[in-house]
Every structure is written in structure tokens, then in C-alpha cells.
Image (cartoon, rainbow, N blue to C red; front, top):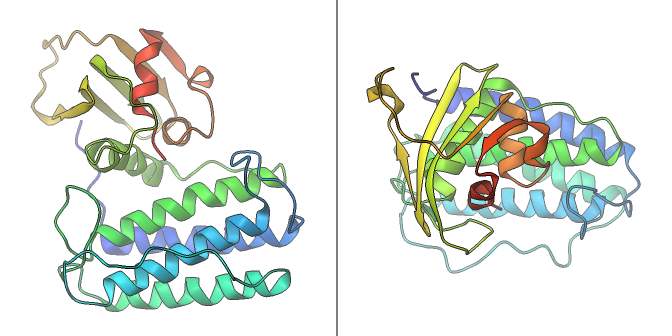
Length: 253
């Protein structure tokens, strides 16, 4: 099946939708309340994490060069209480303005095996915000699914960006082909785990008669798929068959 090809406008529209939803959820949660999907974090930690990423990315895309930055995101010494959310709002607004104004082809560093261009960051920030919006809503027991097209792109991002960059959670080598199916988005993916490496197979060139000998199959809606890949939910909420141990080789974050 053809893969979604996101655009700057698509990702910024997603960022504009999930940002306010994140703020609404955080405003309802106790600042020191737990975030069940991020057990070591409070609500304020979640605000600090996302806002500091916004600030750091704004610095990366604003340099106009592809060299790696020397500074890392900093979450220490940030405001607490009601001021934390106002600080987050400022960083969110500034990031949106920066990404909206920049040509996606402008040079900008990223950590993945992708072209070093600004185009990497609207996608990354849209998906980062969507997952943390879900985290924030879960903290007030009102988590809503990630929009299907965005979630489908999030599955693709895990497979074409995070795993090839070596950012999987489990270092244990695994071998075999896995098929993922997002039924609500009309998307599927075949990937081959090669020890600590991974190859995303091009489904546009796969014939219906081809047998890829997939050792594991996962089917569900796109939101549940991407949340499972990010370790927010268990794979057993999806329809799973075959060698389920392979699926731990897909978790990132």
C-alpha cells in the first residue's frame, strides 16, 4: 500500500491541534500528580520535558547549518506551578512561528539517518507532541487516540528513523520479518530485524503473491500501533500472532 508522504502543512496542522489539547489536559492535572505512562514523571516534569524540547529544536533549526549542536535540552531550573504552563505556551508559540517561517529545505542538524534539513523537525515535533498529549490526557483518565493519519506516520517514523538510528529500547539481537497493519489507516509495513539492525521493506514493490515469511503479525488501529511502539501500551491490546518476542525489538523511546 502507498505510504503517507507528510508535508510541512500536515505536521504543523497536527502540532496546532495537539498543542492546545496538551495544555488543556495539563491544566486539569495536579502539577505534582503522576503521569502513568511515564512513571518517573510528574505533570510538571512532562511540561518541562516538552517545552525544553521546543526551545532546543528552535535553536537547532535557526542556525541554518547542518553541524551538530554543542548544547543539549535542559529541563533544570524551569518555572513551576502555573508559571510552568505559561512558559510552555511561550515555547510552543515560538516553535510554531519558527517552523512555519522556515523553508523545509534549509540546512538543520538531526540525529537520524535522514537529510540534515529543517523538514525533519516539523514531523518530529508533531509526533512528540501527539504522544505527550496522550500522556497528559492519560494522567486525567481521558486519553484520546492519536489521529489516524498522524499515528500512521508515527509508525513509519519509528521504522524509518528511530530504529535505523539505533534508538531501540532492547539491545538484544533479534532476527525475522514482522508485518504491522494499521487497519483504520489502510497502511501496512514489513520490516526485517537483523540482529541490532533493521530493514524496512518497500511494500509498494511487494506483489500479493510474494511470501515474506513474516514470523510475527500485528494488526490494530494506527494509534494503538504507535503507542505500543513507544511503550505506552502493551502489544496484547492489538491482534498479535506469531513470535511475539520479536516485538520487543521494535520498542523505542
